[in-house]
Image 1 (cartoon, helix red, strand yellow):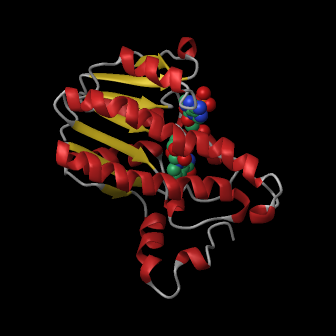
Image 2 (cartoon, protein in one colour; image 1 turned 90 degrees about the vertical axis):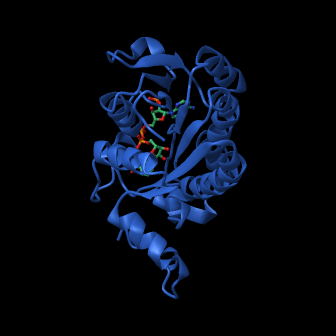
Image 3 (tube, helix red, strand yellow; image 1 turned 135 degrees about the vertical axis):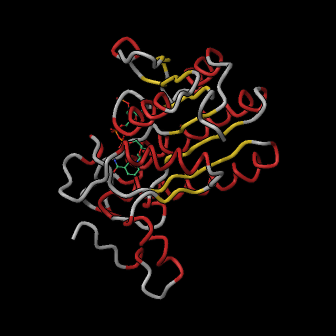
Length: 238
Ligand SMILES: NC(=O)c1ccc[n+]([C@@H]2O[C@H](COP(=O)([O-])OP(=O)(O)OC[C@H]3O[C@@H](n4cnc5c(N)ncnc54)[C@H](OP(=O)(O)O)[C@@H]3O)[C@@H](O)[C@H]2O)c1
C-alpha cells in the first residue's frame, strides 16, 4: 500500500511508538493522520488530529470510528504492560492479564472490527498491528504482557486471512525493546522507535505482511523451529 495520500489512524498516538509512527506517516505525505488518544485536549502536534479513544470501551471505539469515515490505514499501537513479581505463579496474574489483554488484544480487536468496514468502504488499504517479539517467547515477570502479544499475533493471522481477499493488507510488526516509556525502567539495549516506524512503513509499501524490525526479534523467530528455541531459554534480562 502507498502511504502517500492515505488517511491513517494510529491508536495510542500521543507518545512513544504511536507518536513516532504518526510523525513518520506525516513525513511520508499521508493525506491525514488521526491519533486515537485518551486525552485529546492535551495533544498539540501540528498536522496530526487527535480523536478521543479508549480502546477498552466499545462506545469510545464506535464514536472514534464514526468521526473518521475516511480512514484507509489503521495502526493498532495502543498497548500496556506491567510486571507481576511472582511470575507465572503470581496470585495476581489473572487480574493483571485481564487488564493487559483488554488493551493489547481486545482493544486491537475492537478497533479492527470498527475500522475494517471503513477501510473496505474506502476501497481497501491496510491494518498494521504492533505486536512484539514477545509473541514468540515469554518472560515470567511480564507473562501477562507476553500472553497478550501471542494472542494478538494469533488474531492478526486470522484477520489477515479474512481481509486479504478483500484488498486489505494486514501487517504484523515484531520488535524487541524500543526506547519508550513502556520499558524506561529496563536497562537493556533499545532501538529507536522512529527507525522502527520507518522500517515498518517501508515494509508496508513493499507489500510485506510481517515486519521483523530488529536483530533480537529476528533471532527469536529464527529459533522457533530449532531444538534450542529462544522461548526455551530466553536470556534478554540476564
Ligand atoms: N517499547 C517497547 O519495547 C515495545 C516493544 C515491542 C512492542 N511494543 C508495543 O508498541 C506499542 C506502543 O508501546 P510504547 O512502547 O510506545 O509504549 P508507551 O510509550 O507506554 O505508549 C503506550 C500508548 O498506548 C496508549 N494506551 C494505553 N492504554 C490505552 C487505552 N486503553 N486506550 C487508548 N490508548 C491507550 C497510551 O496512552 P496514554 O498516554 O493515555 O497512557 C500510549 O499512547 C504497544 O503495543 C507495545 O506493546 C513496545
